Every structure is written in C-alpha cells, then in structure tokens.
Length: 617
Image (cartoon, rainbow, N blue to C red; front, side, top):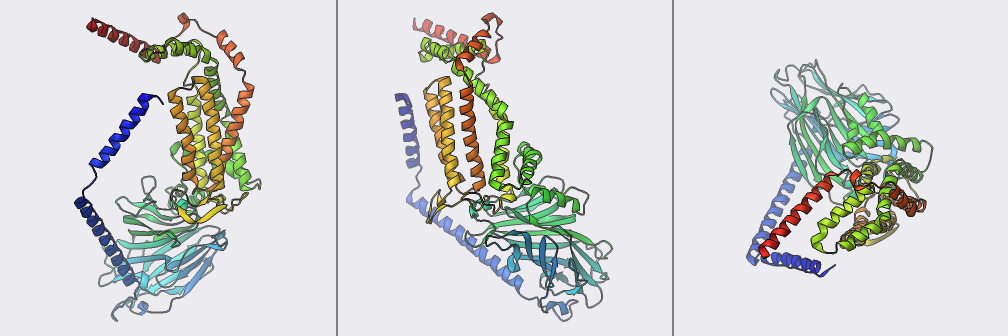
C-alpha cells in the first residue's frame, strides 16, 4: 500500500474509535439499560412460568359434572391401538382419539434404532366443539374403540342423551399418509345449527434427529401453505409467532429430513402459529404450536376430512403423496424440500435430482455418486469455462501492449486517457475485458443448485464415506471437549481440505489475472480478499454437512486440473499471432457505448483543464 492509502486507513480507524468513545454511554445510562434488560428478562421468565402452568393445568383430568353428556368419558383407562403398513407403525390412544407415536421403518435414529418421530408427551392434539349447553374438548376424554383392523380404527365418543362423535383413522397402504374423518351422528340436539366450525389445538416438540444441532436447526421450521400462495415458514433461528389471515391447505412441523404435516380438505382458518427454540442438549429442536379452526357439520351429513403425512422430506415421495391427497388442488408438499431460489430450484428439480437418482440406481457408494455428479456438472459447463479462460488468455497475450500504454501515461491525471487507449486496443484486437465474466455468471446457478441440494438430500443421511460416518452431518475426525468460539468442539477434515483446495484454486486464478492485468494495488487488495474468503468458509462450513464440503473440495480440485490442462493446451504466442491477423484498423472499428462515454469524459476533462489554465493565467 502507498502512503496515501495508509493515511486513509489510519484516519478511518481514528474516526471509528473516536465515534465509539463519543457515543459511549455514561454510567447512569448503562445502569438504566441494565435495569431495562433485567425487567425484560423477568417478564419473559414470568410469561414462561405462566405457559408452563397453563400446560400443566391442561394436562389435569377433566372434572365434568354428572349431568354432562360425556360424564362417563371423563375418566377411564388409556388403551392403545397399532396401525401398520410397510413404511410406518402408528400407535393411537383412545384418550383424545389421537396418534401418540409414529415410527418410520425405513429410517434409523442416531442410536441405529427405527426412527421415532414423536412419542408420548412430545405431541398433543385437541379438538374443540361448541355445544348448546357445554363444549367438547377431546384431549382429556376417553373414547370407545371400534372397527379395528391392521390399518383402520374408529374412536367413538357417545353422548348420554343419544348420538356419538366418531374419529376414524385409516393408514394408506405403502404410504406415510393417514386419513382422519371426524363425523357427528345423531347429535342435532347437542349442537346449535349455527355451529359451522371446530377448533383444533396441535402442539409438538420437534426432536433432534441428526448429529449436528446447529446445522439441523437451519432446516427445522414450522412451514405452512396458504391456499392461493406459495409456502411460507416461521423463523428457524429465533422464537416466532404469526397470525395468518388467509386459509391454509396444510401446516407442517418440519425437521431437516422429516415432517409431520396436517392437511385439511376444506382448509384451516384463523391460524395462529408459533415456534419456540429448545435448548441445545435437550434432545429437541423446536416447540411448535398451531391453533386453527376447521369446517364442521353438526348434522353429520358432511364429514370433516383431514390427513396426516408422517414421513421423510424426500422430494419424489412428497410429489407422489400429492396424488394421494383428497383435494383436486395441488398440495405442493414437495416444497418441504427447499431447493433454492426459483431458477436454482428449477435446475435442481429437473436436472440435479434426476441425475442423482440415476447415479444412485447403479448401486454406487454415496461418495462416488457425488464425485461423478461433480465431474458431469464440470463437463457440462466446460464450454463456458473455456470461453472465460480464452478471454483471459487473450488479455495476457496483449499485456506487452498494455504495458506500453501504462508507461505512456504514468501520471494519475492521465488515467482517463490510459483507460480510453486500453479499451481502444482491446476493441482493435477483438478482445472484451468482460468476456470472462458472462460465462462464469452462467455457471453460478448450476454450482449454487448443488449447494442447496446436498443439505436437503435425505439419501445422504447416515451414509458413510472414507472417514465421514454421516455425509449429512459434519465429520469430526478431530474433536475436543471444550467449545471454541467460531469453531466449536471439532475440526471437519473435509471442510479443511475444501478450504485448502479453494486457496490453491484462488492462487491459480490470481496468478492468471496478474499475468493479464499486471500486479497493481487493486489486484493486491483483491488478492487478499480472495485469500480471506476460504478462511471464512472454513469457520462457516465446519458445522455444515461433510457431503457438501466434500463436493466443494473435489470441485476445487477438478477446477485446478482443468485450468492446468487449459494452460498446457494454449500457446499464447500463437494466440497473439492470431489476434494480429484479425486485427482491425481504426477506421473499421465500431465504437462501443463504453468507448463513446470514455471519449466524452476525456473531452470534458480536457475542457476543465483548459479552464483551470486560463484562470491560472
């Protein structure tokens, strides 16, 4: 750096330090701020205690009067029923007529046991019905069990004065989908004809399913689908609560790789959704709550129909589940697998997923599949890579002429003339300084597609490769007990290799840029920035999936090999001779918009210089 740059940085630092000292609060202001924070914390703790008290109160048995239509159902013995197909085992309780446990047969937890989505107190489902004389709250009532098969069960709540309320569950074959039908029979005297809706209170603690809490948290969120809009979700990184005015097709309590989705045939309305963070180490990620209303016909002529999807966030499985849904409208459940922004999502949906499935069908290990995917992608973008390299090679070939122009205009006040003459030289030889940028820009969505695909590919879950025992989580070959800020308690070897390979790749690229444009101050600043980025990547990706770091590592290695091969294939002397052969005379050149602007700026600069000279005289 030159003297002026150093002085500039020093002044900036002095201003920042001075501004910080000037704005430093007084002791009295600091005490007031601390008192305010303590008050906020006290209110938050008090609110949390009240919520715990409400939950405890809700868990108490319902004390119904003996005159109640459901007095007999207020006490009893909890009984369970098991429904099962090839993919899932469900345990349902007659207390509240709800699903109390869901186990997926095709997936294992971190202890290598069949994966349990929820169990026991993890989840709560309460239906509320408004009657003429009293209300029905199902969560503490004991239903009678009827019509039990391997895949169906009906829970019945009989009323003393006649009539009954049926909850019928049906597990679809070879699917993660469960039908739920709620229907009143002969209860016209209990309900008012004006009753058209029922309330539903659904809560669940989302278990930590994966190895890394931080990485799983990024993809764990309460997600919902408005009827006439695309999906939306609550914050993944903080407590969040939202009241949704528009009707909802479904609500999903989502983990990174698994979801519990509640769908309504006639949509949910008046939804209040809430997501709260759970402490790391508790075994849970989030505490979800959804308070909604749904259509209900008290005459029983039109049953209320719902569905539960209790399964993996697998794109094609969710896509197939849409066809099993009871509505004609597309549920778009596949949106639970986040594949990136619109253009990137399109690439992932129609290219990446199909390529991945095709390679996986060959029975290859997951590490080899990722390697082959990377090679195929690199081959597909090779024409744009070559075009970008060739543009840079042409600029390197013309560097002797650029050096002459730099020597001709050493003064700073001639910078505009130097720029104009340099652009004229490039135009004369048919070289565009931006010729390498557009091809690289075209490549970016393809590489970004894999960035979004890999962390959401459930196929990588618990798949080992080399020293990584789970490509969907970080590889902690090197670990320690103390938590180090920014680094954590482990060192991901694939992340370290990826960062090192990126630094080497940046060195190769910067060397190429220096050869083309010279080693000036701007290039020196860019060089430090390019070397700093891989270091930043290391601290960011150390918690990320090892499969993603592995992909970027081999991608950087292949880029280095491609660049080396292109340099060996390119003879810059022959390239310069070709440029000389295609050189255009000034009269044949077509002036670009940039050249016209530079020429106009130069004329304006000359006019100002002449005016200054006149004033000086």
